[in-house]
Each structure stands twice: as C-alpha cells, then as structure tokens.
Image (cartoon, rainbow, N blue to C red; front, side, top):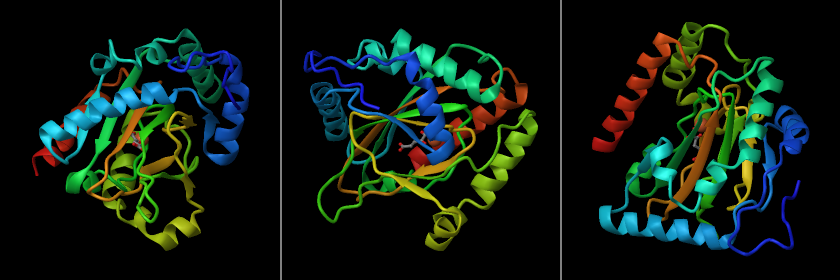
Length: 259
Ligand SMILES: O=C(O)CCC(=O)C(=O)O
Ligand SMILES: [Fe+2]
C-alpha cells in the first residue's frame, strides 16, 4: 500500500485512510505485519532526529523512553497522533480482530531512543504488548554497512488474546521473564519461523501487538536508533490487576535506567 500523494507538500504527513483496514488486517494475519509506506516525510523525520541528537548530546549515550500523550503534543508528529483517519483505522482494526468495540479511543504514544550500552539492555527483550494493535514508526535506524541496524524481530501471531487479565499476566511473566532468553537463540528463531522486519524510516508498520511476541534487535552502542510507537486497545484496560502490572513494569524500566 502506498499513501504517497504526489501533490503533497514535502513537510506534510500523508493522510491515513480507514479504508486501508481490510488489507492491513489481512497482511497482519498472513505475514505478521502490515505496512503503510512513506507516511512521514523526510523533512519531519529530520526535525525529530535533530531533537534526538540534542537529547543525546545533553544526556549522553543512553536509553530514553517517553510514554503518554504529553511528549507528543505540540511536536511535528502531533498531526499524525491526532489524525481522525488514523484513529478510525485503529478502531476498525481492533473491532475486526477482537470482535468488540475498543474499551476506549485512547492511543498511547511512545518514543524510544536506543544508544550506548543501555540501548543494548533494551534490545532483544521479547514481549507481548498489552494492546491489540501497535504501530511502529521508525525515525532513525542505523544504516552504515556492516552495522547492526536494530530491526524488528517477531514471532507473528503466536497466541490469541486472553479473556482474563490474570491469565494474560501469568502468561506474560512466563514467556517474557522465565523464558525471556530463549527467544534470542538463533535456532529457536529459525525453528519458530521468526520474522525480521526491515525497518524503513517514514513507513508505518502495523502488528497485532497482543498476539505477536516481538523485540527490537540490538544495534551498536555508538549509534542511535529511534522509533515511535502508537499502541491502541487494551482489552484489560479497566482491570485492577492490570493497573498493578503496569506499575511493576514502570518500576522495572526505572530500575533499568538507574543500573
Ligand atoms: O522500538 C521498537 O522497535 C519496538 C518497541 C516495542 O515493541 C514496544 O515499545 O512495545
Ligand atoms: Fe512492543
């Protein structure tokens, strides 16, 4: 699918259409990933990269993670986050997959910057997202020849959504913590037909995040990798247990930032 509009000004984000839902859902079912090409133009990517470079210059080569609507408001990505077409598309994808309306219209925007040794600790951490649909926008992916790029690696649609939050939490603990290192092994990836998604800045990559075990591959500590995620539709959003599990996850991220 190509959303490139020849008439589009060079610094304008392409329109995202709800009509893409059918084809995207089909590729997410069949291949694990659906792609909308050339949505965010080079001029906007360059602006975000400048901001990221300043951040790294100020705070050094480490991991930065921003989560929640606050960081994106007023930035050049706000028009994409607020785009009615994107919101309608996410609602449509959720409804198709889950067979119910989404629990809310909230989209969780996240920005991840990987650099330095801390960046490596945030790589190959295989997980299921809490959200039915996740969109990944690569902003900066290392592309020097011979350099590790930090592409996305996934086991597409390994499980179905869990009806009960507690089952989901226990399953995540086993798969992500207890078995966490197993998914990194090349022969396990081969045996379970893991898919490496080559990330191209400016494209939007759609995955069923709740169903697909995934992680970013590592990149060299001296390079910088930046991605933006839009997560949508947590079927266990209102569960009390989920609240606790979220807090534990946030604590773990803070601990990783300190170490
Ligand atoms: O940055 C990436 O490539 C993936 C990040 C991810 O899966 C997540 O934040 O849930
Ligand atoms: Fe994820």
